[in-house]
Image (cartoon, rainbow, N blue to C red; front, side, top):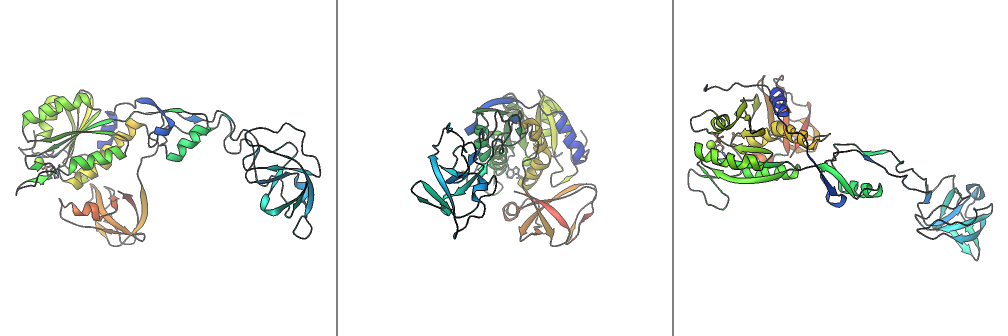
Length: 402
Ligand code: AMP
Ligand code: MG
């Protein structure tokens, strides 16, 4: 094996990742627990919503023409012939000229009525109602099918469901929906120096930051993270953990040991158990990244530095998750901002710079590689394309928010 990376562009690495992506799997879940899930099929309204013309206020259902010119000084006088009850259609004859009906919010507009005057602008005097404001045709009325029409596409396949979507789904007749099954992603931290958070590290040791960070991101992204703990830099240990994790997961992420040093076990182990497809990507940070496959399952070797691992997760692993979930829109919040200073960059590699965002201005946080603090003191990342020699002060950039 060569000591040097065969570095390929990010786009080519992503193509390779998408080539080995398992197809989306589906499952059916109750609408109330579908929040954050990705719809596998489009959602069609099963009926008109609302299914009838209804009032949007408490007031009097009227013929708009009967209220023309009404005001405080000269109110329109109409006879209230009935009171509409919630939850049922009033079957009595239509509102005739000179009459009106009391209607609560959401009540069925009676035949003959074409507007509603809010109760605030009225006064009852026995059977007569004084209307002190004219109503325009259609005022305060929600028309049948004004919200959604029967047969209309309410959500497309690939849409990520929000809490309010659950309400709309129920209104459209869905108690269950078909969504992408959550990919199970195995997480393995590697390195003789690593200890878990519960251990006080002695000099030479560091706590495993990657596993919880990757797990949290993946859970938020709609996956099921599965932790396999810390593995020592020994071939047998790598083989044992991969032999366990690969059959149990849809995707496996190893962090650390992804470079080309003799201590670095990841590439050799993946090659021995499957195939290494990519080793070295034109991305900074994150060049020593491996994409491979064992038993048809995608296996990634992420760099050990937490910031590098995170960038590779976003730039290289996330497209795989998007494909497996069938998402139409990557789930990524961004904000536009103006750069406060020049950011130099080496042409030929895609660079991800941590920036702090304040009042629409993005300021890079330059720091030594390996620092954790920039991960939390920054607001997100600015991507510098491989073809650019940097970004100029004052230019508008898109910040990928954490
Ligand atoms: P490696 O990629 O194994 O060469 O590791 C590069 C750097 O990242 C080393 O300083 C490691 O100690 C550090 N590192 C590797 N894995 C982790 C981890 N899980 N948490 C925190 N730091 C790590
Ligand atoms: Mg290591």
